[in-house]
Image (tube, rainbow, N blue to C red):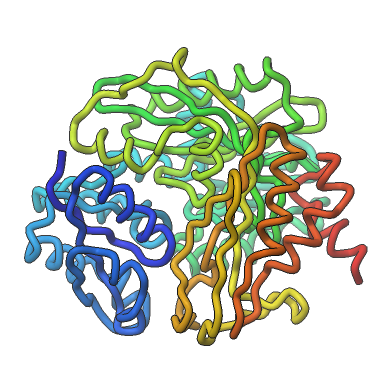
Length: 450
């Protein structure tokens, strides 16, 4: 096992990684920007190195400074968390070139699965169901028109690189396709440095269900069940669950087996997530693979009892998986709410500022992953997510009840947060009945409140 690792991230995920390291007796090095000098992850780590000013591009994305920090502190490995450098193949390769273990998959795998068109080809070759669409990037407008005619409208234009809804357009007719292509290419080029796009058949009102996989360096791959991630706003997840209440045991088995086959086909190592769309007839299709730990990983931990971050560390250190597929059991139901420093009443405007009072909820089955404390200043420079509340129950109803009680108890003063929005959602009949889809929040839940 490593004796010291550097955590190349900030916020709640940096705190989460540091805690796992403490349990394993690993010393930690935090990196921070000038704006984060008083951040909780800096206080909890054994050492801390400032890597630049407030701007992420000059600090948390500053590869030379981060590598220098690792070398100067003699860190043996780097954990990238999620976001920032977690899915940068070039960063993983630089770590390898400097003799630093990158806690994640190999750079070749990150690069292959980071290109959505290439990832789709790899999954199709492995027998994983894929959405009908173009065979890689569309080279011309003419090719796009031809593909759209063949698969039928509506179609969706997607950026080959990146995610988060950037470079994505839904098109319902031939007349709108060329304009959508130009807009998607421009947006993708601005966001990811690549204007390549591809086309897929658009599946209306699907569920977004992902499978957590984990693999060691010796070819052993297992899945840890699914997570329901359909509740989204502007392609950003808001609330996640495990398991998904809408799929059968047989569908769960098929999706799990497909995810394992896909991971084996690309020689995957460490934790990863294969994301699927599930249509109203119960058919599932590969969407993309996230080659990192996910924001919503705690719900899987709660229903399996497996600490995914500790498993990441063990695998990176060369240990074999300590369990087989048959030994993984699922117990109860877990829900996660992402708490953002945003004002839902003002169109979800960011709400930076100083936290003047903070009370974390507790009780049976409640877990809080956060980076906040009383007196801490929420910076305007970074992602607004400041905490995650996870509730576990013996069944979905109990998990919902515990989450509602926990959020009602949680107090964050000095800034606005998304807690009131989550409480409204938890009390919504559509959510409670499980009758929702990826557009439910925007098209039905929010629309009813206008």
